[in-house]
Figure 1 (cartoon, helix red, strand yellow):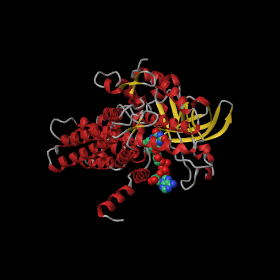
Figure 2: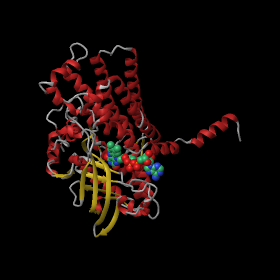
Figure 3: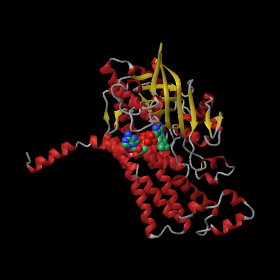
Figure 4: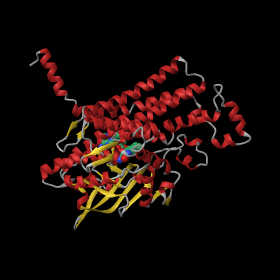
Length: 482
Ligand SMILES: Cc1cc2nc3c(=O)[nH]c(=O)nc-3n(C[C@H](O)[C@H](O)[C@H](O)COP(=O)(O)OP(=O)(O)OC[C@H]3O[C@@H](n4cnc5c(N)ncnc54)[C@H](O)[C@@H]3O)c2cc1C
């Protein structure tokens, strides 16, 4: 079993021949498409890192499931140390790409499904765990990318799935045929979907009696018949189609979000991992969400490293790096970023073994991690905007820099500290712009808010996990209150 290189991964993606609706056009050859290419390169880096001398030890790990060495992005965590290494790996990828590298959502789904199916089988006598083990061993052996699909459109948020005018507002079992089920619905906000070989679909929330049709978990290939992809637009995305890479901000890498429609998609029995067992839908959601909330203590921190580095560099280029308040602001950015990292490491270090054998993060600390993630990157972005200056929002384009008439004025009036080339200063400003207000802000800010659930979801979990009654009891004992 050989781990793929980035090039081999890209070739495997091309072999899928996926098509999507991109900006009003049905489009093929996606990996070579200007809008899609940067996101493919970000995923490819997760493959190359398993071969680079400096990172291979972190990215490679022995998997007892397939009795071989796998890329850590497909590993079922066997210890708290594995959980910590996951966060370190994610920080590395965020730092190296400056964007969302898309591959962790499938990893988080797999670990949640692995432990939930085990417990479901124990209670209901189903055989989901065995099916999932077989399926995931194949994913590991073929070193595949898996999209983790949880978020349903949800329609009217005040209504349950069965109360919606359109039952497809939550992915559901629509029909049953010999040997499998037929599913219908959609999953929104699918990160890296078109860069994936497989999709793991999970319920979006805890289902109740009468909602069995929506308590469904399954895997399908991204090439499955009946699936339609509609590409997500992002601020400044068409800059990726321009001749110069300067205005892109991040000239090499980028993220990807896709709306995914399931129109009567057949799922064979061996790919079904939950089918009506409502009592395990909530556990699956909570476990996936906790792993994913841990993930942000790594990936967003890595992207934060890029933003902090760019902010310190622009301060130097602008000639203000030694000013006291600038130094303080950069230290504040580092403090916020490392606090997120500390939360990611803490919930990993306190991870525990599930009855299935893999390791689950500490759910309280993972939710604290994510709740901080809904705030700190915004503050880091605010400080970066302060330090960078107004050019972030007003700078002329790369085309004008190259223009024989306008270019000389830009070079004259955008000059700052001696020895700094104007084009370099523009590159750094564009990178900061990308992260605080451009396409990169989708991954760094909007995903920090909503990815793995909005802040209210973390507050609910924190309230549930914090043993408030235990704390009250302790105070009563301390004060001798009956
Ligand atoms: C960049 C990005 C990447 C993502 N990647 C993935 C992915 O790869 N896979 C995946 O499955 N999902 C993904 N998500 C989806 C993410 O989990 C959801 O965006 C998140 O759960 C919020 O759901 P929503 O967007 O439908 O917002 P909503 O649910 O509409 O939430 C909006 C607001 O309404 C509140 N609200 C919602 N319902 C209620 C209610 N019943 N009562 C009271 N208040 C309510 C929320 O608390 C929030 O404040 C991604 C999202 C983003 C932005």
